[in-house]
Amino acid sequence: MLNKLFCFAACLSCLVFFNKRAQAQGLGIFDNQTDVGINKLPGGGQYDAKTQQYELSGAGQNIWATHDDFHFVWKRMKGDFILRTNAAFIGKGVELHRKVGLMVRSTLDSNSKHINAVVHGDGLTSLQYRKTVSGITEEKKASITAADVIQLERKGNTYTMSVARKGDLFVTEEVSDLDLGDEVYVGIFICSHNADVTEKATFSNVRIIVPAPATLVPYKQYLGSSIELLDVETQNSTIVYQSPRSLQAPNWMKDGKALIYNSDGSLFKFDLKTNTPAQLNTAPAKNNNNDHVLSFDGKMLVISSGDGGPSIGYTVPVTGGQAKRITAPGVGASYMHGWSPDGKYLVFCGQRNKEFDVYRIPSGGGAEEKLTNTPGLDDGPEYTPDGKYIYFNSVRSGLMQIWRMKADGTEQTQITNDDYNNWFPHISPDGKWIVYITFFKNEVAPDDHPFYKHVFLRLMPIGGGQSKVIAYLYGGQGTINTPSWAPDSKHLAFVSNSDLLFPVFPKEK
Image (cartoon, rainbow, N blue to C red):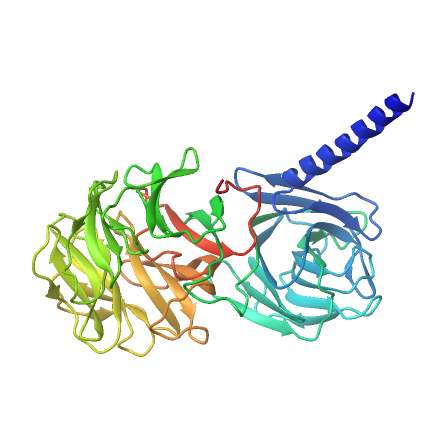
């Protein structure tokens, strides 16, 4: 009898374990979900593993005053973190003040201390918080309404909300001296603002990021990496691979079936069907960095490798093999960035006589030709698909901005002119678009593009016009140093970073 009871208890224990595991897997990156407070109508959350999107339903009278009633999908977290999502209601709705957003709570009690970045049904976008248990909720309204992108960051007891309408840059509000405790509940939520009504919403690009600590030593210590694929039209991004190592600069191969990236001095081919990497042979180049580019016909790579000295340019078959040195050793560093469409020339950023300029060199080797000649950094040169122009980034006007010149170096013209630092212009294969990465000027020097910063990927028409944000992320160095467009000109590959990796995504074994 005792044995039967023991077996029964063991089976119950296993059942609870597997139910919890199945529930966690069903919620993607989150641990669990809860109706907080008194809810006449139960809420629910579902995770679509293919799109990596969530759909939440929930009721609840409000999140306000001294207590809250809503549906919450959450994860327990400690320390500093960044939450981010794109959120949208489904349907017209009933109440103007139905709510969706991101939340951090001390407990799951209805009267808990908390802070939330919230978008209401009427468009009101605000940072709401309760400083004490059962205290009155306070609010800071954003300068915009109807935000599509919501971010909530914790640094100690300071919380910063960054919000944007999709395509725009962030605006922020901040609350300091809010002590919610070290271990908190973080996640996404929905509230119908009517106890008798259930509302629904979708959440895409849901991310929980653990940023670099202040003690991290750049280029010696690294955070984990996620390779993401972005649908440019919908701006939904899916993670296809994660690693605790530093993965950098994915090139999309011409057949659309694989990526090339670098990690720990080696180059890897990443199969998009199996989500597995395979190391490429690039001997004698064994210390490869994130400046590597595919030829337009997809048959060759030009790579950059600093093997015991400054970076040198090599070419190597895309399948791997014996690397051929192209730039001369001893003249200064060479960081390779582009092929001409006819395959005859390579363009690169070269350090010569303590200056960084754009150079071109025959792809088979030979004499290099200097194309820029201004003080300060000129970097990231890349040909247009028709071969007529080279786009690059230059600090010559004060901040780092995007420039263009003819293929022979003449008619150098500034393309962007804003209050940010813009790097690495990449032209879509159809020749219609430019994507580039943007850093905040108060976070980086104009001639620096470090790891682990808040950055944007921005898109602009090749003929000029307004830029729009297509990705909001934590990354920087290695995110998009090289051409990362898919052959269809509709998708991009990039790298984001975090110290926290989730088991629901394909992960390095």
